Image 1 (cartoon, rainbow, N blue to C red):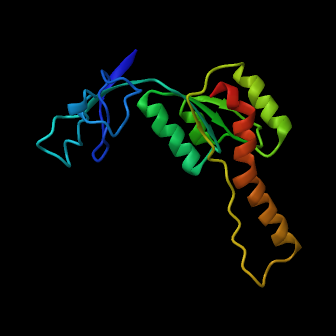
Image 2: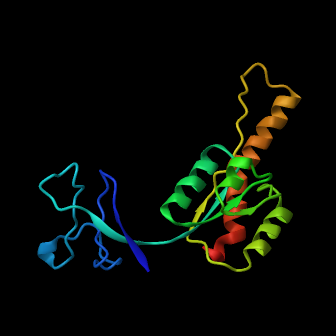
Length: 171
Protein backbone atom coordinates (compact mmCIF):
# COMPACT_ATOMS: atom_id res chain seq x y z
CA UNK A 1 0.00 0.00 0.00
CA UNK A 2 1.50 3.26 -1.13
CA UNK A 3 1.07 6.77 0.14
CA UNK A 4 0.61 9.90 -1.95
CA UNK A 5 3.35 12.50 -1.72
CA UNK A 6 4.14 15.74 -3.51
CA UNK A 7 7.61 15.31 -4.92
CA UNK A 8 10.30 18.00 -4.61
CA UNK A 9 11.13 20.45 -7.42
CA UNK A 10 13.48 19.56 -10.25
CA UNK A 11 12.62 15.86 -10.27
CA UNK A 12 10.92 14.32 -13.22
CA UNK A 13 8.83 11.29 -12.32
CA UNK A 14 6.34 8.96 -13.84
CA UNK A 15 2.92 8.84 -12.11
CA UNK A 16 2.05 5.55 -10.42
CA UNK A 17 -0.25 4.42 -13.26
CA UNK A 18 2.76 4.29 -15.58
CA UNK A 19 4.35 0.85 -15.97
CA UNK A 20 7.81 0.76 -14.42
CA UNK A 21 9.17 -0.91 -17.55
CA UNK A 22 8.35 2.04 -19.82
CA UNK A 23 11.57 3.44 -21.30
CA UNK A 24 12.42 6.98 -20.23
CA UNK A 25 13.04 8.33 -23.72
CA UNK A 26 9.80 7.22 -25.41
CA UNK A 27 7.23 9.86 -26.32
CA UNK A 28 3.47 9.88 -25.61
CA UNK A 29 2.93 10.13 -29.37
CA UNK A 30 4.46 6.68 -29.71
CA UNK A 31 1.94 5.30 -27.22
CA UNK A 32 4.16 5.52 -24.13
CA UNK A 33 2.90 7.19 -20.92
CA UNK A 34 3.27 10.94 -20.53
CA UNK A 35 5.86 12.23 -18.07
CA UNK A 36 5.08 15.27 -15.94
CA UNK A 37 7.72 17.98 -15.34
CA UNK A 38 8.43 19.62 -12.02
CA UNK A 39 5.55 22.02 -11.16
CA UNK A 40 7.98 24.64 -9.81
CA UNK A 41 10.31 24.60 -12.81
CA UNK A 42 7.42 24.24 -15.29
CA UNK A 43 4.41 26.09 -13.82
CA UNK A 44 2.38 25.34 -16.94
CA UNK A 45 2.69 21.62 -16.16
CA UNK A 46 0.53 19.61 -13.80
CA UNK A 47 1.49 18.96 -10.13
CA UNK A 48 3.56 15.85 -9.69
CA UNK A 49 1.81 13.28 -7.55
CA UNK A 50 3.18 9.75 -7.27
CA UNK A 51 2.50 6.64 -5.26
CA UNK A 52 5.45 5.47 -3.20
CA UNK A 53 5.70 2.42 -1.01
CA UNK A 54 7.44 2.11 2.32
CA UNK A 55 10.93 0.75 1.76
CA UNK A 56 13.31 -1.12 4.03
CA UNK A 57 16.55 0.84 4.09
CA UNK A 58 19.79 -0.44 5.64
CA UNK A 59 22.34 2.25 6.50
CA UNK A 60 25.91 1.49 7.58
CA UNK A 61 27.76 4.12 9.62
CA UNK A 62 24.41 5.13 11.09
CA UNK A 63 25.54 6.44 14.47
CA UNK A 64 26.53 9.96 13.35
CA UNK A 65 27.08 12.31 10.42
CA UNK A 66 25.66 11.43 7.02
CA UNK A 67 24.55 7.96 8.11
CA UNK A 68 22.55 9.35 11.04
CA UNK A 69 20.94 11.95 8.80
CA UNK A 70 20.03 9.32 6.21
CA UNK A 71 18.35 7.33 8.99
CA UNK A 72 16.53 10.42 10.23
CA UNK A 73 15.23 11.39 6.78
CA UNK A 74 14.29 7.83 5.82
CA UNK A 75 12.38 7.38 9.08
CA UNK A 76 10.59 10.71 8.53
CA UNK A 77 9.49 9.50 5.08
CA UNK A 78 7.95 6.45 6.71
CA UNK A 79 10.54 3.91 5.64
CA UNK A 80 11.62 0.99 7.80
CA UNK A 81 15.22 1.72 8.78
CA UNK A 82 17.92 -0.73 9.83
CA UNK A 83 20.79 1.26 11.33
CA UNK A 84 24.16 -0.52 11.38
CA UNK A 85 27.07 0.79 13.42
CA UNK A 86 29.84 -0.18 15.80
CA UNK A 87 28.31 1.71 18.74
CA UNK A 88 24.95 3.53 18.65
CA UNK A 89 24.81 7.19 19.60
CA UNK A 90 22.06 8.64 21.78
CA UNK A 91 20.78 10.51 18.70
CA UNK A 92 20.43 7.24 16.80
CA UNK A 93 18.70 5.53 19.71
CA UNK A 94 16.22 8.42 19.89
CA UNK A 95 15.09 7.77 16.30
CA UNK A 96 13.32 4.55 17.26
CA UNK A 97 14.73 2.55 14.34
CA UNK A 98 16.06 -1.01 14.30
CA UNK A 99 19.72 -0.90 15.36
CA UNK A 100 22.29 -3.61 14.70
CA UNK A 101 25.39 -2.59 16.64
CA UNK A 102 28.88 -3.98 17.26
CA UNK A 103 29.36 -4.31 13.49
CA UNK A 104 32.72 -3.31 12.02
CA UNK A 105 32.08 -3.34 8.27
CA UNK A 106 35.70 -4.39 7.63
CA UNK A 107 35.32 -7.65 9.55
CA UNK A 108 33.78 -10.71 7.81
CA UNK A 109 32.72 -12.17 11.18
CA UNK A 110 30.77 -8.98 11.96
CA UNK A 111 29.13 -9.09 8.53
CA UNK A 112 28.02 -12.67 9.23
CA UNK A 113 26.55 -11.40 12.52
CA UNK A 114 24.72 -8.66 10.60
CA UNK A 115 23.45 -11.17 8.08
CA UNK A 116 22.11 -13.41 10.87
CA UNK A 117 20.47 -10.44 12.62
CA UNK A 118 18.53 -9.65 9.43
CA UNK A 119 17.10 -13.17 9.44
CA UNK A 120 16.55 -13.26 5.68
CA UNK A 121 14.50 -10.04 5.57
CA UNK A 122 14.34 -8.08 2.32
CA UNK A 123 16.35 -4.86 1.88
CA UNK A 124 15.09 -2.36 -0.69
CA UNK A 125 17.96 0.14 -0.36
CA UNK A 126 21.49 -0.42 0.94
CA UNK A 127 23.36 2.75 1.90
CA UNK A 128 27.05 2.06 2.47
CA UNK A 129 27.83 5.22 4.44
CA UNK A 130 30.37 3.97 7.00
CA UNK A 131 33.65 5.74 6.47
CA UNK A 132 36.71 7.29 8.04
CA UNK A 133 38.82 10.28 7.07
CA UNK A 134 42.52 10.59 7.66
CA UNK A 135 44.12 13.83 6.50
CA UNK A 136 47.71 12.95 5.65
CA UNK A 137 50.23 15.08 3.75
CA UNK A 138 53.04 14.04 1.46
CA UNK A 139 56.36 14.35 3.20
CA UNK A 140 54.74 13.54 6.55
CA UNK A 141 53.75 9.91 5.94
CA UNK A 142 55.34 7.74 8.58
CA UNK A 143 54.38 4.26 9.82
CA UNK A 144 51.44 5.58 11.88
CA UNK A 145 50.13 7.66 8.99
CA UNK A 146 50.43 4.68 6.67
CA UNK A 147 48.36 2.61 9.10
CA UNK A 148 45.66 5.32 9.11
CA UNK A 149 45.70 5.39 5.28
CA UNK A 150 45.23 1.60 5.19
CA UNK A 151 42.33 1.88 7.65
CA UNK A 152 40.75 4.57 5.48
CA UNK A 153 41.14 2.49 2.30
CA UNK A 154 39.80 -0.67 3.94
CA UNK A 155 36.78 1.15 5.41
CA UNK A 156 35.91 3.45 2.52
CA UNK A 157 36.73 1.28 -0.51
CA UNK A 158 36.85 -2.40 0.46
CA UNK A 159 34.17 -2.58 3.17
CA UNK A 160 31.28 -1.43 0.91
CA UNK A 161 32.14 -4.33 -1.41
CA UNK A 162 32.14 -6.76 1.50
CA UNK A 163 28.85 -5.44 2.90
CA UNK A 164 27.17 -5.58 -0.50
CA UNK A 165 28.47 -9.09 -1.13
CA UNK A 166 27.29 -10.29 2.28
CA UNK A 167 23.76 -8.93 1.74
CA UNK A 168 23.42 -9.24 -2.02
CA UNK A 169 20.66 -11.85 -2.06
CA UNK A 170 18.57 -9.74 0.35
CA UNK A 171 18.67 -6.67 -1.89
